[in-house]
Image (cartoon, rainbow, N blue to C red; front, top):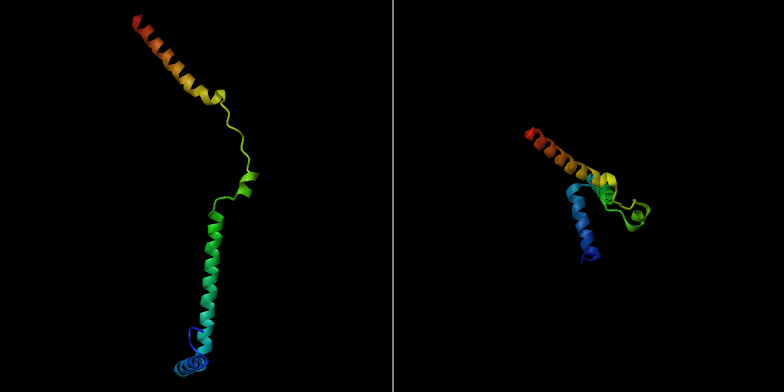
Length: 99
């Protein structure tokens, strides 16, 4: 493990035990465990959020059907009406100016 033998790991553990004491080591391990657990929860939340914002897959796209776009009179009517209205208004103005 990490290029260290059993004796090296045992010596490191004994040094940690002497420095921190037998009472403090379980508290540190518990804090470390809580930190890891919170980190995993945060990572899972971020991953779920990314999945929600992801574009739909092909399976989801096939269930969504849209009507084909067709040219209707209503789509073209406003442009034609405004052109005719402008022509009528200009004709009325010129007739009013002549009278």
